Image 1: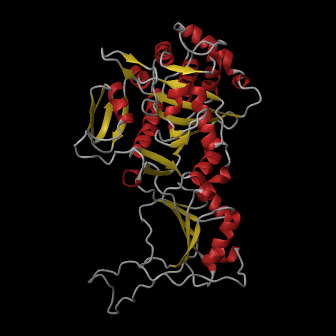
Image 2 (image 1 turned 180 degrees about the vertical axis):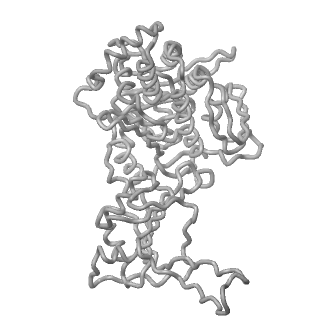
Image 3 (image 1 turned 135 degrees about the vertical axis):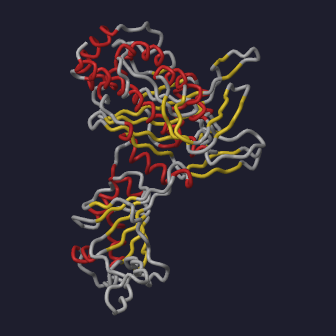
Length: 496
């Protein structure tokens, strides 16, 4: 087989690794495509030869969007389900709940992918019933249709398709890929004999086999009575699931032997149930074959835990305003929705009165909803020279706080790097220094609180003339804000 065909086929494998996103207790990957181009739903077909795979890949390559007439984006509700076990230790999936739930949105035109996770304990009205409960019970009581309708009632978006993956999907695929490499940030130990789940992971770079990968993705809390881990809770769990997804895609990109494709297909298809036809899955893989692990935008609907007064059960209450903003951004493709998710603090780095309030008003009018005036600030004082380093007899002059000539943006973890570019546009600037210092997820949850601190320079004043109503907050009496000297700085509205 010539190298060009091998490279193209490998790209399709990677594409399907994104589309058939599988999850065990969470997101995990799946396999690498190349199933028969047929009209029936997936499941139960025989394996493909390499020759068949290449033939069908060629058929799809010419017009893969034909599988989705009239659509420029599709949304798939992906569900990873629990396994149940009989008294005789036999696995079954009847009455299984969704251990993982997320919306996978695929932009067929721009080839962009996004995932919006929904915590399993989210309190929601269960469609078709008269009661509200944990959203993971919707599938248990009414299958994929009820799960889709319940998510639709909650978030106002009706998934076009569904994909259900059983608990073995990740284990089988990781083993078929030869394992995956991940960075385990904290120690994790959990043992559930009934649920056949044994997790023992130590910090550091690890090469995980299928069973360990399942533990990495599913860990939620330590053994009863044992010391907890910073990895406890659903937020960190969803974060690790996204890490696992990217790790599996990265591993798929390293596959050197195309002869592995038929086996990977068989492994993957045996663990999936979906209303997408095999032909549509193949089309999607062809469309997204060039995707990179970091190209996928991910988030989880925000909110807080609460305890029911009646029975003490724990639930998750979504912050609906922010959740709907995430839906608009990630599911509906509204890039301006990021303005409702980005808190901004504006500081005046000049001696021009009223500058910060001028920018606050401007950004609010531009569509940002959480913008506040942080008062005035000055460039940090440079450390005084050490004794004995002066030249001549004159003592050095005391260092003075500096004025900012050029506006600086400090990004500490916005959901989308494009947000800083949008802010620069909103301030009517053509150039600005953008520094990025993301918060560490292991300290503040898998989705760090987002914020941008703007320190206005004289360039902003020149681009935005004053109005009569300008007035700034009192000068900041706290220590001047410091900028990480190790953070990368670039010209232009770039976050890199």
